[in-house]
Amino acid sequence: MKKSISMIQSDIISEFSMFDDWTEKYEYLIELGKSVPKIKDDEKKDENLIKGCQSRVWLFVEKKEDYIIYTADSDAIITKGIIALLIRVFSYQKAEDIANSNLHFIDKIGLKEHLSITRANGMLSMLKQMKMYAIALSKTQK
Image (cartoon, rainbow, N blue to C red; front, top):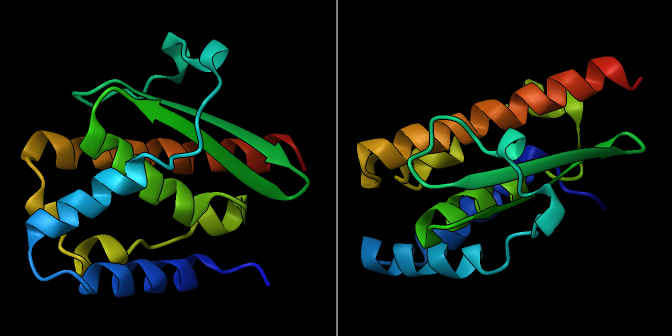
């Protein structure tokens, strides 16, 4: 059974609750970044860079059947972990579900408050771009 966005967020909250402090949570975030679904090298072009990120983050999206699939890469290890989390929540979901989602896990695990202002803004830019791609694909490929 495919998990809903809400179920995936619950899984992430449970995983992060296993760690006692933010040093361990950062280490886990870095580990997650190593498993980010990698963007193809030929897709690492300027139009796939996320604007508003201090680090370089490339995001590619495609639609297969009714599902949106994201791949990404970044030149920063924490940022790679953040995009890996967002991809885990959004990939293989329907565009409408992505567009209408409320990502409560970010606050529940304390991620935003433990990021620098520039990284938190970058995460919001990633989120916004992922939702915009989903909205665009839902309208163009029905």
